[in-house]
Length: 212
Image 1: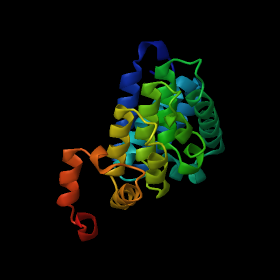
Image 2 (image 1 turned 90 degrees about the horizontal axis):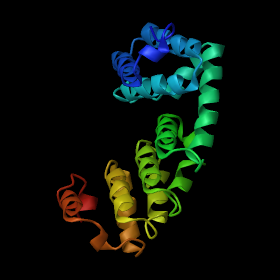
Image 3 (image 1 turned 90 degrees about the vertical axis):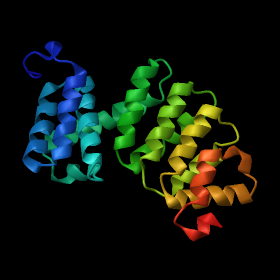
Image 4 (image 1 turned 135 degrees about the horizontal axis):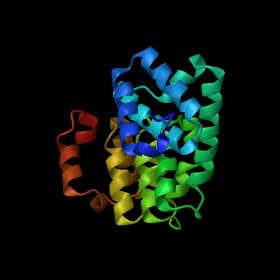
């Protein structure tokens, strides 16, 4: 139906179906979805499909770039183009916030090598709040050690809302919490910036080093 009459299909339904495919994580089904995305030809629909698929695959700790080496050339070309467009859109202040958020979310599902040159810049004070928050959420999904340092580096100029989002990202990984504590010791972040809920998590954390 998407290929024949795309105007009759809601993006929410398409994304949900792609998500289910990712959750099922069956190679032949994923291949069929990627092939369908190629034939849709509209990059807006392709992004929706990939965001849904990425969300489903995330349940298995899989990122879609892991699929690229085995994908047909047409799929690889589509994904390369989507990445290129997302990099441009994420930083384009002439686009709507909604368009930029979708681009940021897509970059958050890509590899850190792709996202690293783009997303930290979107935490800057001159960016709209929704863009900053989307960038922080996207960065939080990566496993790389450098995420906590990025957040610490932007802490002083961050709004309360952005600090909340970054703190949430920091507490997703034990290794990040240790960097936070080091930043507090180094006076880059005040201990009072850590609210009572997170302080309780520190006191009850299974890692004795963090408790201390």
